[in-house]
Image (tube, rainbow, N blue to C red):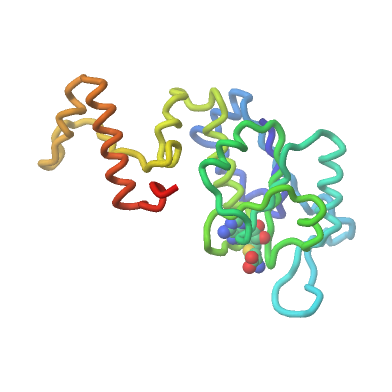
Length: 225
Ligand code: SAH
């Protein structure tokens, strides 16, 4: 999968994809991430990418032209499955959307700044608008990193034990069951006996029961869906 990220601060995204699981995904050639500096597509010598908003008021708006130049350039080179704009007024990111996106070939992610991008870019180019939650960040880079991390770990071949992603929270509409490792007793707290029993059927049932219990207690809304 190829993900092109359009940003005025590519340096903000240098680290998140250079460690751990995403690093491995890139090394294996399963995920290619290209950071594109929007300023390279600004025409004037100051490489301006934002300006005051029509109608007045505080806050700059990201200009149409550099973004359109950049997108036209990318679109002339290949087809894209989605052109995503990270924005607090987009659809809230859910695991289901992440699952769908992990099956795509080419994706563009546009990171906003200041007041966001000129509305006409959204009308003309954007195919999907995603928010990572009901709060406002100063730029789209961290949200893009969240989205890419969530997508990247689902690309087939990225996780060592591929089935492990299937049992994460939300995948089956439930939160995850509690997990334990060594030692068997830690500060008086013992690992549940069933997990030491070696009985796979009982372990499966216990985990399902605990997942259900935890979901009922913490996220009853998930069970209603
Ligand atoms: N004025 C806008 C907020 C702009 S915040 C509004 O009120 O909706 C600046 C940029 O940060 C946005 O363009 C977006 O790319 C990014 N951003 C901020 N919060 C975000 C969130 N919760 N989800 C996704 N992107 C977000």
